[in-house]
Every structure is written in C-alpha cells, then in structure tokens.
Image (cartoon, rainbow over all chains, first blue to last red):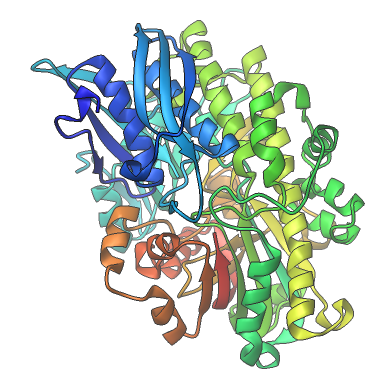
Length: 144
Length: 480
C-alpha cells in the first residue's frame, strides 16, 4: 500500500446540504492520493474496490488548488461516464499545475458495490491547501 | 457560528448591513423561529460574499429556505445590471433548471387511496431513477442538439405529451439563446444517456391530494379543488447541467482574473454579462435549461402511462394536465423597476423560484391576471404548497420567492438520526408510501432533515412576496 495510508486519510465535516471533507497528507503527493481515495470511499466503500485494471490520468490547473479539484473531477467523470472506480493512485508527476498518475481499480458492479452517494461535482468552495508542521491538509465540498 | 450582525427590519426580514467590501446590503427573509438555524449555519457569510460582486442591484437576497451552499447560498437571489454586472455559473448551481412541475387530475382522493401502492410501483417501473440512472430513451448527438434548442417542444414533437402543456411552463419550456456549440463533448457524453431520468438525492415524483384551499378564486383559476389528486415532479438537467456548470466554472475562474474581479470565494467566479465569456456561459446554460424542460416533459408523459397502468383508466377519464412548471436554478434576463426606472438585469436564482406578480408579459395569458403559480414542495411526510407571485415580490425580490423547505440537518446527521429506524414504516404510519432507489437516500431525505415548509411559506406570505392558494398532503412517491 502507498505510504500515505499510514495515518488518517480524510474525515467528513459537517455541511447541511452537501458533503464536506478534510483531507490529510504528509506530502503533496499523499494529499492528492488521499483525496482520490476519499472521493471513491464516499461514493462506494473504498476498501472494497479491487485492482483489475490501470488507467493513466493527466490533468492540469492554474495552481495546485485547481489541480486537486480537476484531479477529483476527472476521476468522478470516469465513474459517471465509464462506471470505473479506483482505490490505488500512483502519482508519477506532480507540479503546481500538472499531474500525471496511474490509477488502479475495477468496473462498478451493482451486485458487489453499494452506491452511498452520487457526487455531481467537486466544488471550488472555500478551497485552500494549507501546510502546518510539515503536514498538508485541504477542505473540499462535493455537490451531491 | 456566524458572528455577522443581523438587523431586524420587519417580522419577516433581516438585514446584513453594508460594510466594506460589500456593494449592497444583504437581506434575509425568515421568521424569528427559523432565524436561529440561519445563525448556526454559515449562510449569512455567503449572502455577504455575493453582495461583493460587481454590478449587484439593491440587495444580496436570501429566501427563508436558505441553507449553506458553496459559493452562493441555496435559496439566494441576486440581480446584476446587464451594463456593469456579472453572470456566474455558481450563482445558478450545478443542477441547471432544477425545477418543479405540478400535474392535476380529475380524480379525488377516494378514487385512488386503496391503489396508491400500485401507483407508486408503476411510477417506479416507468421512470428511471437513482444514482447515475440512465434512460430507456436513446437519443443521438443530433437529437440532443435539438433538445438543447427546443426543450419541452422537442419532447412534445416526439410524442411525449401535449402541445397544450407548453404554455404552462416557464419560458414555454423553450428558453431562447441556446448555442449547442458552447456545450462541451463531455457534457454531451454525460448527459445523453440521462435524458428521461429522475436522478438521485432530493429528486422525486410525488402523488398528493389537496388538503386545504386558501383562496377559492385563485384555486378555481388553477383548476384545483379539495381532495383532488395532483402529482409533483422535481428534477433537473441531470449530468448534462452538472457538466456545463463544471466546465464554465473553470472558464470563469480565469475570466475573473482577466477582468480584475476580486473573489471572496473561487466558487463565486464570474464574468461581465456582456463579455464573450459571460455570453458563452449563458448560451451553454440555456442548452441545459432546455434539457431540463424536455426531461420533465418526458417524465410527465410517463407519469400518465404509469397512472393508466395502475388505475386501468383512459387519459380522458384521468384528465391529467399541467398546472404549471417552475425553474429554481437559473439566470434570466429580466426587466425590473429599480429606483423608479426600468432596468434590464440578469437575475440569478439558486434554489429560489420566480414569482412574478399579475400583469407580467412573461406569464401565460390564462394566468396573467392572477400572478404566476409558484410550486413549493416540502418534505416527504408533511406538506407542499401552491402559491402565486405578487406585486410585493416585484417590488422587493425581483419577482422571486422560496423554492422548498430547505435542509435543516446535514446528510450525515440525518443518516445518524435514522439509525435503527425504518423511515419507510414511519412514513407509512403517516399515510405515505415511498419507494426509493437507495435506503441511504431515504434516510438523508427523511422529514425531520428539513425545515417545516409551512414555516417557510409563512415567511414569504408574511413578507408579501407570495400568496397562498392551496396546501397539498403526500400520499406516496418515488425517490432517486
């Protein structure tokens, strides 16, 4: 498993209408990996996803805040349009504006996976990636 | 906790006084009873943020069903001067033209009460619902472009419903200004399989009866009577609208920087209405508006099919027809009187309903003298309302009012509160039979997760921005 799983990956915060999470990471790569895991863990149970195929995901953004939203939006788009779900994320290249990753997962199967939430969109609301004592965190609101 | 000071203006309105960098004050419509929820939520901050946007007119408004959104609050209304104001995808929301249609029948409660379970089963069978639901309808890219331009008319031309439905839909179900070229391939790929689907979350089809008539004349004009069976449909533009919004938020983040617009929250990104970016978003948004109009038209047709199957009666005996259909996530170019002068503005309603008073040319002729019908769905267990718009709404809120009950509990809290309970059974005890695609949805959407819609309606009626016509009680429904 990736080193980012060593500590808490994310937690769900209160939000009256939608879903708000706080994601943690020891490194910027870890933060992106944990954000990807959180997305699928909220939709279906992340631990239950098998790694049957790999896919390359490439996204860009004007800064790392937009990049993390675009990364999650791309993963969500792969679920919505191709029923693909992932729980392993290997970051190959990450700058403030570009990300390239290999993601591993399987096809969603209603007999094995239960949908807990449908995420319509990953929002930019109140978005900021912060660094405290060499730990990174960010809060993200999903429109559901 | 919100530390923003709210100044009481009347029993139904509170002001957030203007301070830097707000361009206008904020104004919240509520009752004293609901004010505490508003204080505990983060919404006043969001109302204040919207007040900072360029070209906003009079107030950043919040309806009594307001709750915390992202960027703009849900239940927010903001009008911007077309000459120096902005248009914002976040001010419309992801589910572009999410809205409500009310259908009436010639049936009374006694005619169907023992058949309600069968009706709900048939509705569940006929109308695809749930997460990522895809339709039984297959459209080509070319047809989808026609949907984007023609809206509900496309559905009628393809055999879904009657031409007479169209005049009873906001914009006659076909908003002008659509440009399919402004819509991304991603939106098309996401939206095409979802035409003719209900979706998930708070979307539903509900069978109701008229519990109480408040105004006999207005009810008579809308063709409503006590104990009558009516059906409410609540859905929107599905993944198509979500993707249009998502695409344009990215464009607008860059446009905001280009035009030097200071954003208190990225989700409020926007561009001048007259700019190429603003115009392009508007053209794409209209495509999604029309997709949603077509979607509700198709679902209305399936409601009729389901009722025919469940009740073994002909359409003629059922007398199913549209009362009205409203949009509640939309931006529209409208003319309003501001400081005694006619001003063309772009009114953003996000979780708010247009509620034009009598006389407006935008209203269908049959309703023009009584004001626009406004449809306010409540939660699954309590009630819904039919209202009409008033002159007061024209004067105070750019012809706008509330759109529903408004959430009280977060989905997380609702699920926790539902642990160990059967929400289905509790609803059945209230005389409401519900089928949902997922148990989680049912828990999240349980009645106590919402404010009491009657309190919300009391605030808009008390403030004079709407007038009560009828109260509806649910008998059953399908949820996504």
